[in-house]
Each structure stands twice: as C-alpha cells, then as structure tokens.
Length: 272
Image 1 (tube, rainbow, N blue to C red):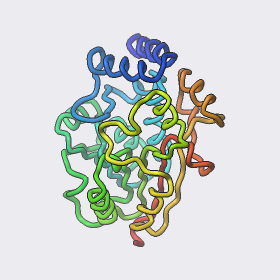
Image 2 (cartoon, rainbow, N blue to C red; image 1 turned 90 degrees about the vertical axis):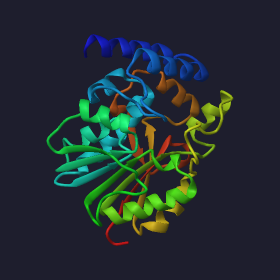
Image 3 (cartoon, rainbow, N blue to C red; image 1 turned 90 degrees about the horizontal axis):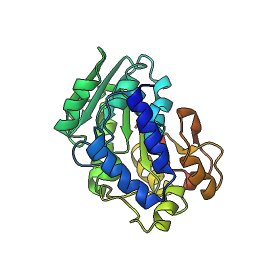
C-alpha cells in the first residue's frame, strides 16, 4: 500500500466512527476537494486504480467492489457488457477474467477518465445510453448492470430491461439498493433524519417488487442479498461498518433479503 492509499485509509477509518450525517458531509467534502472525487452528476466513485478502491477499506468502497469481485469468476471466455460503467474500475477488474469487456456510460467525462486510467487489450469504453444501445441482438454473452436501474423512472426501467434482453445472449447480473424499511441501511438513514432516498434515485425497490419486475422480462431469475458477514442485528452492522474492511468481509446470501444492503439478481437470457 502506498502512502496516499494509507492516508486515505486512516482518514476513512476516523470518519467511520462519526455519526452518519457527519460522515456523509465529510466524505462529500473529501471526495470533491481532496481526492479525485466524483466526476459528473451522480454517485460515481472515481479513483485511479482498483487497488486504491480496496486499500481505503471504507464500507461503501468495498461494498461496491465486492459485486464485481463476486461476478468475475463466472466470466471465463465470455464477452461482457458493463452498463453504466462509471469511471471504469469495475469493467477493468472484470476484464482480467472475461474474454472481452465493453463498458458504456452516458457521461463523456467518466468515459474519458476510464480510457485514461483503465487500459487493457480486451477492454473498451464508450459513451452510450443504456436505453438506446448501439449493439445488435445477442452481441454479448453477459450483461452486468450495477446500481443503474434505481436512477431511472419506471417507464425507462422497462425500456432498460427490454434492451438488455435484446443485446444479451446468456446471463444478466443486475444489482440495486434495497429499499425495504427493514434494511439496515434504511434504518440508519431514518435514525439520522435523512430522506429515504438520495437525490439521485428515482426508486428503491423492496425485494419483492424487484423480483416481480425482473421476472416479467426474464424467465429464470435467482435473487441474492449483499451483506456483511456475521452481522445479524442493526447494532452489529453499525459496528462492523466502522472497521477497515476487505472483500472477505462481504457475502452474497439468499437468507433474509429484507435486511441486506443491496439486492442482486442473476437472470438467464436467450430463452426469454
């Protein structure tokens, strides 16, 4: 770990001990002014390497990275489309496992960042709209869509799923925040007096709502919840978040989806 990553880890660990509302304010200040920060509108994390993302050890960073880490081993010899790829760190990680990866995002700024910082022979980035994808039917074996659908109004969510069904040939991995009031993340927001959703989300699904929507378009869907390991209560979760975390601290489970931070679905394509 280099000195910069080490300093970020220390700062993140200190902030993690503070009340939730103060944490969010300080993270915003740090990302926008001291670090590379968030580019463009939204919640994108922007860093210069996958290692930097992990080394910081902050809950939200590792939570995001773990989704790609969980998906990656299934991608051997596969062509992959990463929808809403953001700054490119996830696409870059997947490209170490897949035959080829294409990442698209509608933000020109983040695609410029991705092309500059995340380079591999089997990885390409381009500006594109997930609702009007410039790809022919069955162009990709696997479609990965991480934390995108909640940013869209309901009619656009339907369009997104139709587009995915068209360009994907074998499998879809799609994740979204859990909007169930029993979710520890939602309890934290309520106790802190924060709005139920961030300003960037149009809708956060209950697990059952998410299941109904996805099963409308895809015949074979398996649902998982992303959570910290060995966390059974809200108090456990709050304490665990304050630690310096690694990928090994997270898991995907089919147990008690209501309390999981994020809902992940794996759908079969091609037979729909």
